[in-house]
Image 1 (cartoon, rainbow, N blue to C red):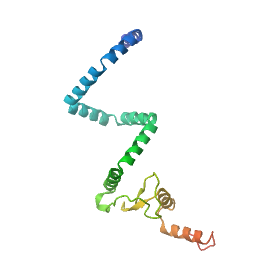
Image 2: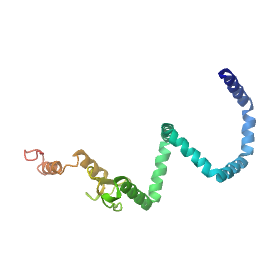
Image 3: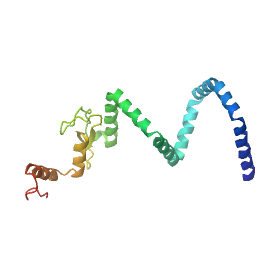
Image 4: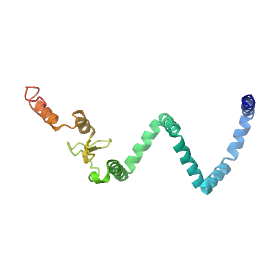
Length: 184
């Protein structure tokens, strides 16, 4: 059985090599017809095709992930440019959807999410092409505010500990360590 399949594959390879140009010409000639036929077929069978696709995705999540990852790796620059263009052209939709997704992730009852401002709510810096980060309490999940990258990283580095932040402020104000800035 396997030997027959191998012979068939070999025959198909040879046939394709010998008839490639003729096939290509035929393909170019009938491209529009084929496109119209495929479009019409899809419109008529859309629900069935979508159901099959969803079924395959649920049965093979690793395969879907690998395929999507491989595509992204091959088209990373294009995807980043496309996403950036979308954010630039639709700033309000991006802000709304970001807020909605964060609210959904954190739970709607854990506090309202306000619209993303133009500047960091801590230092007032404008992100300049980058987005503001959704800051939340890591224990309760409650929304706290919108931070620029630097403020968000600073909070993360001190593990959201206000005592450490105060000690760092004293350290900076005194020009270095003088003993009083030791964190508890």
